Amino acid sequence: MKKDSSKWRRLGLIVLIIGTLTLMGCSSLSLESFKTVKGSNMDQEDRQGAGGQGESPPEGSQGEDVTAEKPAHEEDNPIQEGNEGSDTNEEGNSNPVFTEIPPSQNTQESPVTASPEPAPPGTPVRTFYELSGTPPTAPGLAMKHRVFKEEPPKIVYLTIDDGPSENTVHILDILKQEEVNATFFVIGTQVERYPELLKKAYEQGNAIGNHTYSHNYSEIYQSPEAFVANLKKNEELIYKLIGVRPKVIRTPGGTHGNFHISYYNAVDAQDYLVYDWNVSTGDASAPLVPAETLIKNVKEQAPGRDRIILLMHDAPGKWTTVDALPKIIRFLKEQGYEFGVLSPEVAPILFPGGFYS
Image (tube, rainbow, N blue to C red; front, side, top):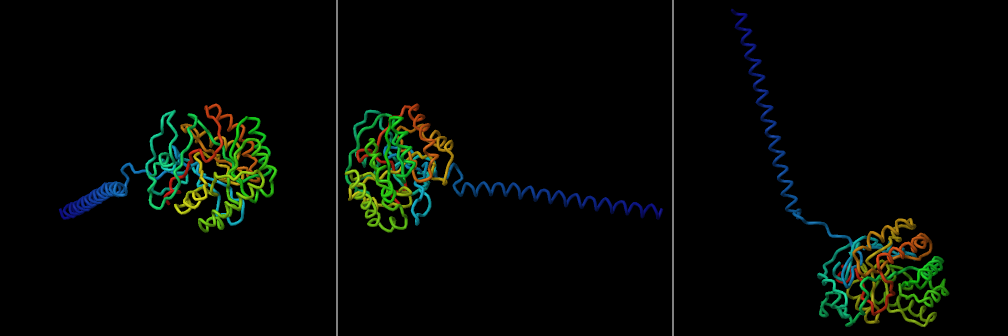
C-alpha cells in the first residue's frame, strides 16, 4: 500500500506540473496574440496619422505647359567646369507647367497655383497671365503683359541645347531631310568654336536661342545681374554672326531650383522669355545614353500631350542623339504633330517650382 500511495503521489505531481506548463503556454500565446493584434492596429493608426489615407508622394517634375500638361526633368549636360551637375532635374519624367505642373521631374515641388483647364481648339490668343493662371499682381512679380499666338491642335518644338558642336552638322542634315526645324539653344563658348555652324543652323530656318555664354553654374547663378550679364555676352556674340538678338532663353539646368522671382524679373526687364521643357530624350542623364533608350523615353512621355517642348542635346560626344533623332521625328509625325520653332510669341512651358520658389 505504501508503494501504491507513493506511486499515486508521483503521478499526481506529474499531472500538476503538466497542467501548470500548459496554462503558462496558453497565457503566453494569448499575450503574443494580443501584442500582434495591438501592434497591427497601432501600425495602421500610425500610417493614417502620417497621412496614409490616400496620400501619395509628390510627382517628379518636368516642365509643364504654361498652357497646361506635364519632366522628363533634365537638362543640359554640363560642359563648362564649375557646373553643379547635369541639367536633369530633369531628366525626370512627368508633366510640368507654369502651374499645372514638375517636373519632373524636377521633380521638385514648391507651391503653385492650379493650372487652367486646357482650352478647346480655336480659342483666341491668350495673355501670359491667362495661360499661367498667375495674377498680374502676384507678390514681387513684375513681368510684362504678353500675348501669345494660337497654335495648331498638336505641335512639337524640338529644342537642342549645348551646341554647336561636330554633332550639329549631322543634326542639321537630318532636320533638312525630314523637312522640319528646331530651336538651338547655344552656348557662347561653343559658338566661338563653331561660328559657321551657328550661321548654317540659322540660314536653314532654325531658331536660335540663348543658353548663356559660359554655362558655368558658379558664375551665372551668383545673382540675377550676373545671369543677365552672361546672357548679354552671348547675345552680342550671336548678333555679330547672324544679325539677330535672340530673346528666347533656356537656363542651364532648367528653372527649377535655380530661378526665383528676382531672376524672372531681371530677364523680363531685358525682354527675354524663359523656356523649360515637358518631354526629354534623357540624353543628359549619363555621358552616353543608348539611342534606343532615347527613343523609348520620347514614346513614353509624348502621348497625351497636345503641345510639346522636347529637350535634347548636341553637345560634344552626344552622337547617340544624332542616331535617335530620325526615328523620334518620324514617331512624332505619325502621332499627328506639326513642328514649330520657339519665339517670344510662343507660350512658354515652365517647371512648377521655378516661378514661385
